Image 1 (tube, rainbow, N blue to C red):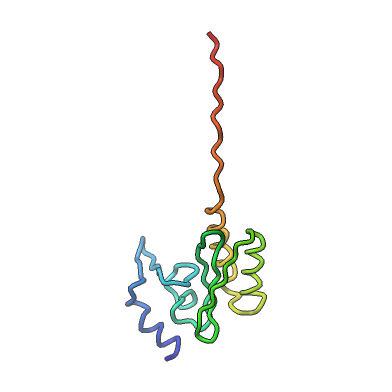
Image 2 (image 1 turned 120 degrees about the vertical axis):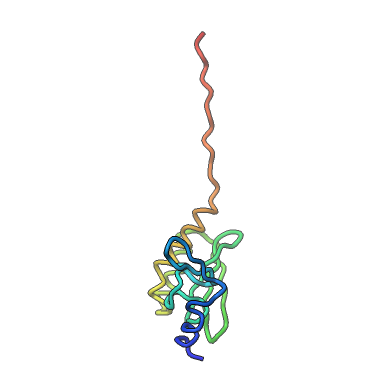
Length: 127
């Protein structure tokens, strides 16, 4: 079945659709931008790019020959972004989703960093 026909079937009727504030979003796996659109759909496209959180770092998901391939990226933020850029735009896989994938990976990496709490210093009060 072609991707266009699959999209025509699930475009308005899918268990992943979420309507919020006048926009239609999608919670389907491997949908980078969470928009309910053919371009971002992780179910019907032949080439898929997905980013999700791991224990440390992120997991990059791509589809080749009908099989999903998961690659764990956990060696640092800049190296992760470089790897994502090489896997999407560098290899001409899905260059249109490069920016969205980098934004999502950066947000996940930023959320995994330890936040240091500023110590409250007590002052000596003058009597």
